[in-house]
Image 1 (cartoon, rainbow, N blue to C red):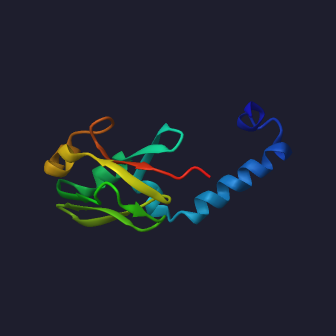
Image 2: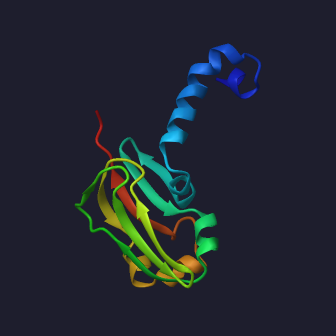
Length: 130
């Protein structure tokens, strides 16, 4: 609620804060810094690289993303990047199924060196609705 944001009522906000802290502590710090997840619909998400990761990698020369149809558990390998500074393995931020990959980016990974936002997405994934 807005009161939580404005710090007017701390006690009613504690359950929300505790939940957020538990989530953040359960996700490895590096993982939180690598991927940006945009919700497209109820159970469809677009996964992109963060600007921080792109900047830290230098020139990206190779990208491999698991093929559509692959189901991936949280924390499992979903993509690899190779840059002038080394190789980075990316892991799924949650259980999901890859529905679409950015073929243009896989064919020309150097686009990541100058593209962010709409063109710099890696894949679209579907989560199960329970």
